[in-house]
Image (cartoon, rainbow, N blue to C red; front, side, top):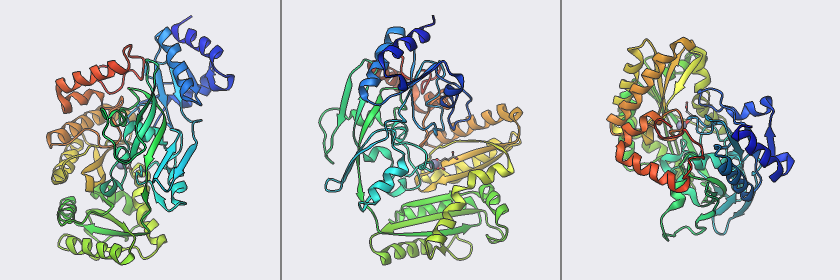
Length: 462
Ligand code: 2HG
Ligand code: ZN
């Protein structure tokens, strides 16, 4: 018997029968992939846990047999964080999907990690409340995954990322403790901020089984506008001017010329001749005049660079139409080149034009097109290297490496929202340096002395 087989046999005896998927290659295969394009890595078994106690049981068995434990959410991750690269036991949180409470009087919610992000948003909105983080995958991804990756999204510009909303978590760590970290109050500074450490730790320190989230009152009005520019440089300058003048819209999304050309194919004549970049602007608030006033102020601030009129959505249908440009961008890019590798670097906003240039050059030197789009207001951009056949993959990987290094060289980071995972582990040291990395490895060893939790992730060389 291999260690994994022995662990599975023990888990069969320790847990209710419906929790375990084992010895069924077809049943395990879906748990072996995500949205990272890194390949298929199914675990030896999956436990669909229902409680923190069950997670503790998995850790105890895995510890005895020294087999890996890999947390698995909705499998929508883009950096390979949930792939079982060394096999072992997948801990799926999909059945822990209850919204435990929404407390309008405290502006908090308590949820299990398998709750789909969009479902929580709808539930709190029914109470007039608001959970701002909005990763593009929100109809699919789960709050547990968002916590693991510290997910962002377009609204992060005004509202911040997942970490800003996590007041506390319950986490089970490999040594077997079930820890209640953080608080339910808005303020609280007791002890080290271990909640913040867990958020964004990519499933390498513990498995979160409950999350207490901060909510906001829901803004009652939203204004959405589309602005066309001649070039990415013009659009980037407009972004800086808007922010520097003290206007912080809730979203400032950019599409570069390659992205725009892919969109324009499906709607010829929609954009004026010479259009080389788009900005999608959204503001919100409780007073409709103030919301529209803010859009007008943005329009005024960008008028020097913009081409033609700023298009302001007059109703919900027009608002949706504007957002569909962004939502279906990936599909439209794939219509031009069927394959793409998407990055999520972030740079200081002033470095956006340089990053776009360097990303293009990294592709062009290898005969590849690069489309850049995303959360320009945050300096967080998705550089997509486009290609047609798997044979081009080595060149694509080389272009991506150049883009990641360029982001760091420009004062930025290799990942603004998707995490390091498996995809970017070889670049973490380039960004953080050997001392920081060594300290991070020591922190990892405190939580997981045997290295059984999600091995092969974040750190170079596994
Ligand atoms: C988005 O902002 C997501 O749409 C995914 O972060 C972006 O990888 C991508 O293309
Ligand atoms: Zn994004």
